[in-house]
Length: 187
Image 1 (tube, rainbow, N blue to C red):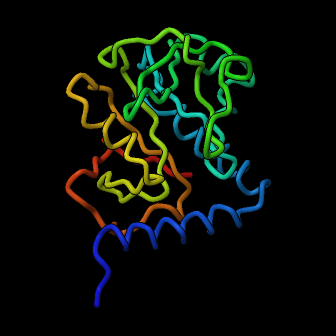
Image 2: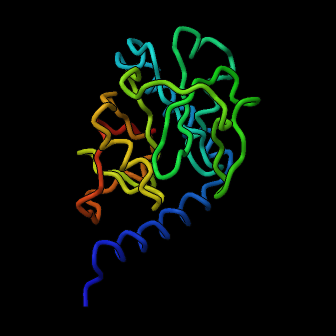
């Protein structure tokens, strides 16, 4: 019997997590550098005045690299998501090393007292995922937080899924609640 979409998604999540975990740290940094160079060269990035970043897990593209020289984010209002019940809210961040706190599952997010902004204020959002398709379908980590964010009526940001090239697949098992991103960028 063929597995249903939920079971197929869980199997694919396990395979992608293993593939990411087996990527050597030096290869992750090299791939991240290429991915970020591609991102920074886009007109959408250059034009964005407000961006939603994500605090990467140790196996994901290292968006923390954007903060290293101080120029890549100098002209932008930067926000990070924070879990608020079952939804994500956007919190202003100016120094992630000091303002992001570790929480469960190895994630980092702004403190509960960090100032939030209306989702409508975000112009560009970088979205994590375990796998994507070229059309923007996304396989998340399994909690549904980004699916709910992407479905929020007030969230009108242009969304870019960031991943390594091996995470771009021809198709994904999907369910009705799965939300897509506007575009996908790989290394």
